[in-house]
Image 1 (cartoon, rainbow, N blue to C red):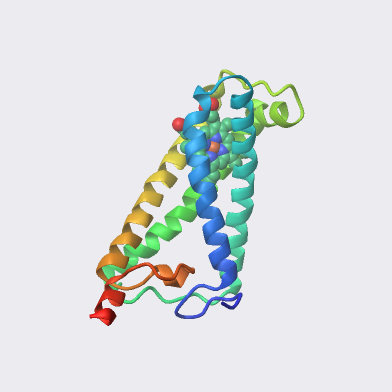
Image 2: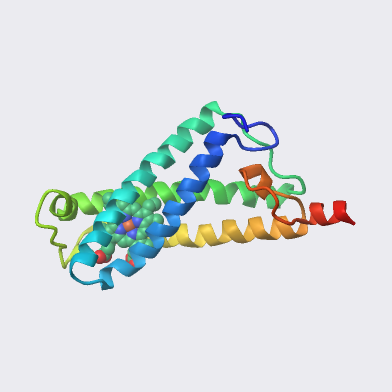
Length: 186
Ligand code: HEM
Protein backbone atom coordinates (compact mmCIF):
# COMPACT_ATOMS: atom_id res chain seq x y z
CA UNK A 1 0.00 0.00 0.00
CA UNK A 2 1.46 3.38 -0.97
CA UNK A 3 1.48 6.34 1.44
CA UNK A 4 -0.83 8.40 -0.77
CA UNK A 5 -4.43 7.54 -1.65
CA UNK A 6 -5.59 6.72 -5.19
CA UNK A 7 -8.97 7.32 -6.93
CA UNK A 8 -10.10 3.87 -5.67
CA UNK A 9 -8.67 3.45 -2.17
CA UNK A 10 -7.10 5.27 0.77
CA UNK A 11 -3.31 5.25 1.20
CA UNK A 12 -1.34 4.16 4.28
CA UNK A 13 -1.28 7.62 5.91
CA UNK A 14 -5.07 8.13 5.61
CA UNK A 15 -5.75 4.52 6.71
CA UNK A 16 -3.45 4.86 9.76
CA UNK A 17 -4.99 8.19 10.79
CA UNK A 18 -8.51 6.76 10.33
CA UNK A 19 -8.04 3.68 12.53
CA UNK A 20 -6.05 5.41 15.29
CA UNK A 21 -8.72 8.16 15.39
CA UNK A 22 -11.53 5.57 15.44
CA UNK A 23 -9.94 3.82 18.43
CA UNK A 24 -9.44 7.13 20.26
CA UNK A 25 -13.07 8.16 19.61
CA UNK A 26 -14.36 4.89 21.12
CA UNK A 27 -12.09 5.21 24.19
CA UNK A 28 -12.93 8.93 24.68
CA UNK A 29 -16.69 8.36 24.41
CA UNK A 30 -16.61 5.42 26.85
CA UNK A 31 -14.27 7.06 29.39
CA UNK A 32 -16.06 10.43 29.00
CA UNK A 33 -19.45 8.93 29.90
CA UNK A 34 -18.12 6.77 32.77
CA UNK A 35 -15.44 8.90 34.46
CA UNK A 36 -17.69 11.17 36.60
CA UNK A 37 -18.90 8.04 38.48
CA UNK A 38 -15.41 6.70 39.30
CA UNK A 39 -13.81 7.30 42.72
CA UNK A 40 -10.36 8.24 44.06
CA UNK A 41 -7.20 7.45 42.06
CA UNK A 42 -9.15 5.68 39.29
CA UNK A 43 -11.16 8.86 38.72
CA UNK A 44 -8.02 11.02 38.54
CA UNK A 45 -6.38 8.58 36.09
CA UNK A 46 -9.53 8.46 33.94
CA UNK A 47 -9.73 12.27 33.74
CA UNK A 48 -5.99 12.54 32.97
CA UNK A 49 -6.29 9.94 30.20
CA UNK A 50 -9.41 11.59 28.77
CA UNK A 51 -7.75 15.00 28.58
CA UNK A 52 -4.46 13.68 27.14
CA UNK A 53 -6.12 11.39 24.55
CA UNK A 54 -8.62 14.15 23.65
CA UNK A 55 -5.73 16.54 22.94
CA UNK A 56 -4.05 13.80 20.87
CA UNK A 57 -7.27 13.28 18.86
CA UNK A 58 -7.45 17.03 18.24
CA UNK A 59 -3.91 16.94 16.80
CA UNK A 60 -4.72 13.87 14.68
CA UNK A 61 -7.93 15.47 13.36
CA UNK A 62 -6.06 18.65 12.37
CA UNK A 63 -3.36 16.47 10.71
CA UNK A 64 -6.06 14.59 8.76
CA UNK A 65 -7.56 17.84 7.52
CA UNK A 66 -4.12 19.11 6.38
CA UNK A 67 -3.20 15.73 4.82
CA UNK A 68 -6.51 15.61 2.87
CA UNK A 69 -5.55 18.83 1.13
CA UNK A 70 -2.37 17.25 -0.30
CA UNK A 71 -3.60 13.68 -0.75
CA UNK A 72 -5.56 12.26 -3.72
CA UNK A 73 -9.29 12.07 -2.83
CA UNK A 74 -10.83 8.65 -3.57
CA UNK A 75 -14.16 8.70 -5.45
CA UNK A 76 -17.32 7.82 -3.48
CA UNK A 77 -17.72 3.99 -3.38
CA UNK A 78 -19.52 2.44 -6.37
CA UNK A 79 -23.32 2.48 -6.01
CA UNK A 80 -23.51 5.81 -4.16
CA UNK A 81 -25.25 8.54 -6.17
CA UNK A 82 -27.48 11.61 -5.80
CA UNK A 83 -29.02 12.17 -2.38
CA UNK A 84 -27.24 9.11 -0.97
CA UNK A 85 -23.87 10.61 -2.04
CA UNK A 86 -24.82 13.94 -0.47
CA UNK A 87 -25.67 12.19 2.83
CA UNK A 88 -22.46 10.12 2.69
CA UNK A 89 -20.33 13.26 2.27
CA UNK A 90 -22.36 15.30 4.79
CA UNK A 91 -21.75 12.70 7.56
CA UNK A 92 -17.98 12.93 6.93
CA UNK A 93 -17.97 16.75 7.08
CA UNK A 94 -20.19 16.75 10.20
CA UNK A 95 -17.89 14.21 11.87
CA UNK A 96 -14.94 16.57 11.38
CA UNK A 97 -17.02 19.50 12.74
CA UNK A 98 -18.16 17.36 15.71
CA UNK A 99 -14.64 16.18 16.50
CA UNK A 100 -13.18 19.69 16.34
CA UNK A 101 -16.09 21.02 18.44
CA UNK A 102 -15.78 18.25 21.06
CA UNK A 103 -12.02 18.61 21.35
CA UNK A 104 -12.11 22.44 21.25
CA UNK A 105 -14.82 22.67 23.93
CA UNK A 106 -12.98 20.07 26.04
CA UNK A 107 -9.78 22.13 25.93
CA UNK A 108 -11.71 25.35 26.72
CA UNK A 109 -13.47 23.64 29.67
CA UNK A 110 -10.21 22.33 31.07
CA UNK A 111 -8.54 25.75 30.86
CA UNK A 112 -11.50 27.78 32.20
CA UNK A 113 -12.21 25.46 35.14
CA UNK A 114 -8.52 24.97 36.02
CA UNK A 115 -9.02 21.18 35.62
CA UNK A 116 -6.09 20.74 33.21
CA UNK A 117 -3.70 22.63 35.48
CA UNK A 118 -4.86 20.69 38.56
CA UNK A 119 -4.54 17.29 36.84
CA UNK A 120 -1.14 17.80 35.21
CA UNK A 121 0.60 20.40 37.42
CA UNK A 122 -1.37 20.42 40.68
CA UNK A 123 -2.83 18.05 43.27
CA UNK A 124 -5.11 16.25 40.77
CA UNK A 125 -8.36 17.52 42.31
CA UNK A 126 -11.42 17.69 40.04
CA UNK A 127 -13.69 20.76 40.39
CA UNK A 128 -17.21 19.76 41.52
CA UNK A 129 -18.80 22.56 39.51
CA UNK A 130 -17.81 21.80 35.88
CA UNK A 131 -21.39 22.56 34.74
CA UNK A 132 -20.88 26.20 35.87
CA UNK A 133 -18.62 26.67 32.84
CA UNK A 134 -20.25 27.25 29.46
CA UNK A 135 -17.93 24.92 27.46
CA UNK A 136 -19.33 22.01 29.55
CA UNK A 137 -22.67 22.34 27.70
CA UNK A 138 -20.93 22.63 24.31
CA UNK A 139 -18.85 19.55 25.17
CA UNK A 140 -21.98 17.50 25.86
CA UNK A 141 -23.66 18.62 22.61
CA UNK A 142 -20.55 17.94 20.48
CA UNK A 143 -19.58 14.66 22.15
CA UNK A 144 -23.13 13.26 21.85
CA UNK A 145 -23.22 14.41 18.22
CA UNK A 146 -19.94 12.57 17.59
CA UNK A 147 -21.48 9.44 19.17
CA UNK A 148 -24.61 9.70 16.95
CA UNK A 149 -22.61 10.44 13.78
CA UNK A 150 -20.19 7.57 14.50
CA UNK A 151 -23.15 5.20 14.83
CA UNK A 152 -24.58 6.53 11.54
CA UNK A 153 -21.20 6.17 9.82
CA UNK A 154 -20.63 2.59 11.06
CA UNK A 155 -24.23 1.62 10.21
CA UNK A 156 -23.94 3.08 6.69
CA UNK A 157 -20.64 1.29 6.05
CA UNK A 158 -22.05 -2.04 7.30
CA UNK A 159 -25.15 -1.67 5.11
CA UNK A 160 -23.07 -0.78 2.05
CA UNK A 161 -20.70 -3.71 2.67
CA UNK A 162 -23.64 -6.17 2.95
CA UNK A 163 -25.83 -4.86 0.13
CA UNK A 164 -23.44 -3.23 -2.38
CA UNK A 165 -19.63 -3.29 -2.61
CA UNK A 166 -16.50 -4.02 -0.54
CA UNK A 167 -15.87 -0.64 1.11
CA UNK A 168 -13.79 -2.07 3.98
CA UNK A 169 -10.93 -2.95 1.61
CA UNK A 170 -10.76 0.74 0.56
CA UNK A 171 -9.83 1.60 4.16
CA UNK A 172 -7.24 -1.17 4.55
CA UNK A 173 -9.34 -4.08 5.90
CA UNK A 174 -9.39 -6.96 3.42
CA UNK A 175 -11.37 -10.20 3.58
CA UNK A 176 -14.62 -8.81 5.05
CA UNK A 177 -17.49 -10.62 3.23
CA UNK A 178 -19.49 -8.36 0.90
CA UNK A 179 -22.18 -8.71 -1.76
CA UNK A 180 -19.38 -8.44 -4.37
CA UNK A 181 -17.35 -11.31 -2.87
CA UNK A 182 -20.40 -13.62 -2.59
CA UNK A 183 -21.31 -12.86 -6.23
CA UNK A 184 -17.76 -13.74 -7.36
CA UNK A 185 -17.88 -17.04 -5.41
CA UNK A 186 -21.25 -18.02 -6.93
C1 HEM B 1 -13.17 14.47 20.17
C2 HEM B 1 -12.71 14.28 21.37
C3 HEM B 1 -13.56 14.06 22.59
C4 HEM B 1 -14.66 13.26 22.78
C5 HEM B 1 -15.35 12.37 21.77
C6 HEM B 1 -15.06 13.43 24.17
C7 HEM B 1 -16.13 12.79 24.78
C8 HEM B 1 -16.63 13.10 26.03
C9 HEM B 1 -17.86 12.58 26.58
C10 HEM B 1 -18.79 11.60 25.89
C11 HEM B 1 -18.04 13.16 27.81
C12 HEM B 1 -19.26 12.98 28.71
C13 HEM B 1 -20.26 14.00 28.16
C14 HEM B 1 -21.53 14.13 28.94
O1 HEM B 1 -22.03 13.15 29.48
O2 HEM B 1 -22.03 15.27 28.98
C15 HEM B 1 -16.91 14.02 28.06
C16 HEM B 1 -16.71 14.79 29.21
C17 HEM B 1 -15.60 15.59 29.44
N1 HEM B 1 -14.52 15.77 28.59
FE1 HEM B 1 -14.36 15.05 26.72
N2 HEM B 1 -14.20 14.31 24.78
C18 HEM B 1 -13.27 14.71 23.83
C19 HEM B 1 -12.21 15.58 24.03
C20 HEM B 1 -11.90 16.21 25.22
C21 HEM B 1 -10.75 17.07 25.44
C22 HEM B 1 -9.72 17.44 24.38
C23 HEM B 1 -10.81 17.47 26.74
C24 HEM B 1 -9.86 18.35 27.47
C25 HEM B 1 -8.63 18.60 27.12
C26 HEM B 1 -12.00 16.89 27.34
C27 HEM B 1 -12.44 17.09 28.65
C28 HEM B 1 -13.62 16.64 29.18
C29 HEM B 1 -14.14 17.02 30.48
C30 HEM B 1 -13.47 17.98 31.47
C31 HEM B 1 -15.39 16.40 30.63
C32 HEM B 1 -16.37 16.59 31.81
C33 HEM B 1 -16.48 15.47 32.75
C34 HEM B 1 -17.40 15.87 33.91
O3 HEM B 1 -18.44 16.52 33.70
O4 HEM B 1 -17.06 15.53 35.03
N3 HEM B 1 -12.64 16.11 26.40
N4 HEM B 1 -16.07 13.97 26.96
